[in-house]
Length: 313
Image (cartoon, rainbow, N blue to C red; front, side, top):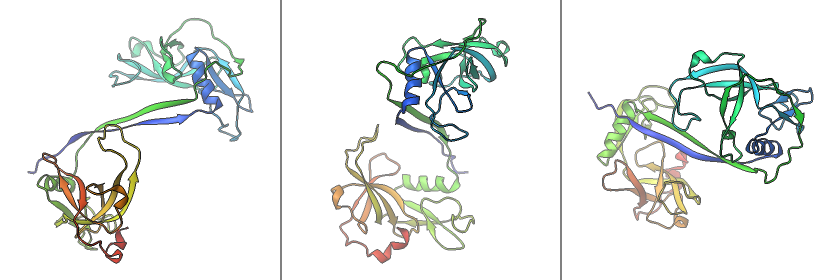
């Protein structure tokens, strides 16, 4: 029985965005221990605030300060907090309708156990000690037995307003390739490239998918392709990626390996970025200990005629 392959994978990137006047006031307010909502034309107060009325789509700027106390409208217990979640002890995810608001804010509720949480319970904001103008300035909510607060108009003016944020996005998961991709990866470890041929249209797909994306039928006939190929299209990368030790600018290209009917993408090296062109003939360069080519370099052959690869552009 063939080895079942699996590997941990991480997809991570920082999402950077500028803030309009409403979101800027909201996040700056959190830094100053003030929770702001926005009032719609029909008088509803939305927290968190949005810039456009969800019913009429009209722009809204009427800011309202609401209380830092509220009521749990619904909740779910999280017994096993994960990395970078707000609390490292078990907690409840809760929708909290703050006093003076008509919508609920999603955040975490610090409670000793699920038996201590119920819909309708009163809570208040626990502010973070160090606040920077982010939703995490609310460290969490905690149970509260005091009186309900109210709301009041607010001009949204603060000193040194927050004008932009960077939000890290990350997905951790374990990837297990199927039969077709396992065979492809095992072949790469031996410095070979294999695809699979569709029994109907006879096209060879690299990397193989286990089924033909055009005909929808299963594929199991292995075909060795390449290792040389032709650049069909390419792009010049001018922004350096985090944790990628490659100097910019560099080129990523779609490469149609000889004998394949689908182009794969790879980095082009061994040539100045501004000399890469469609039709360039290339071959893989393997690094010691790697299970896949590090990059592709020119073979020195004459460029391929456009008609030879135009169907793969």
